[in-house]
Length: 444
Ligand code: NDP
Image 1 (cartoon, protein in one colour):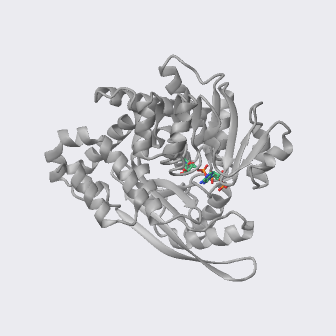
Image 2: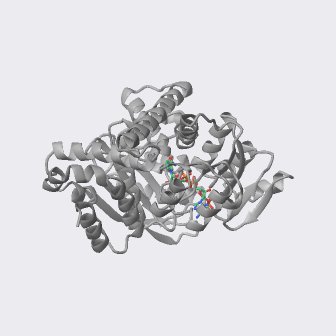
Image 3: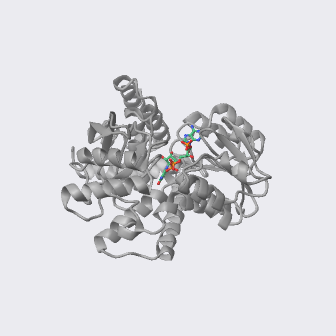
């Protein structure tokens, strides 16, 4: 049995109740086989694969808080500090009722590779809780965030671990967390990113993951002598990544016609009016169906099914495994030519192979949505310098980072004889970089 298969088998046996984590490891290991096979002796001697799948640290803790009725609520919090071979830990916090250890570990594993692609000195970590801010008052969210950080602050800090946002964790939540961190430690530093720009947050951090995704889609199209200008685009989700992916695609001249949330989807044949979506989602914290009440030509369909809308470009920006094998078939049948993952792991390995086998240009999350963590890294840099760059400066750096990632990914794929296999290119480039650092630093 190959070294890769041995370790995959061990992961499955050791954590049989962590399907998302196994899925992420399999996707990576399956594509880095040529590298592992070529270096088998070195990697085995240094237990590179075994160490790669074992987090350096996983913290799980109780989060008690008081709700609006004075009742005590208990949630569970986690932080997985997965790998610090190339830099201090960095990664978001997910707040959603469905969060569990498997989801936190898959996100932690993925972000180690993603951060290695950015070129910034960042290791990988991820955290979260089964607390869902939806339907909670601001005061309840604050109570939760303060309790969460009262435990988490022992393990984070600007030189140790810098959390940021993810699903359910936007600037409101990060601001509350930073406030409590500062209160407990007395430090005003770059320990959290995604803060309000009024007190140390980077400009473009809010837009970064979505803008970066738009830049990446344009890079992919250009490599084929095409452009996203004039193309019909469907974006799933209507949260942070989705909204700013729509904004960048529209700035680049694309025609975005559909978005969704977990209740249903809207289609606007005239093109999405993003100011209305922002008002509903960012200001009122409402539901996407409200868009159709305000825009006469738009329609709202309850339930899943946004993939049925024919499009040239599909940008999944909601959640893991949102693209089923059946929806993949529909997308291909309707002529999609480019997919870039805004969400983390929206499709499994077999589904990605299906797209690739049908000639669809496919960019995996760790490359396509790396703009978010990149600008988080730039926020840390600005905090350390006690200086702020302008919106234009940060946006220009983001664009360069996304261009560099595209170059690394496509060059690596070609070097391994798999041109246009961006999944392989991303995993091979990132894995090789982290593995080399792990070997150089000894058995730790
Ligand atoms: P948000 O919480 O801001 O938005 C998530 C959106 O996805 C919401 O509109 C939500 O709808 C929708 N959604 C969630 N689950 C489903 C579902 N099963 N079906 C349809 N819609 C769904 O999160 P983000 O935009 O921050 O994150 C989205 C994805 O992007 C995640 O995979 C995240 O890991 C990834 N990501 C985020 C980054 C960031 O900086 N924020 C950076 C890189 C990646 P509802 O309101 O109904 O829950």
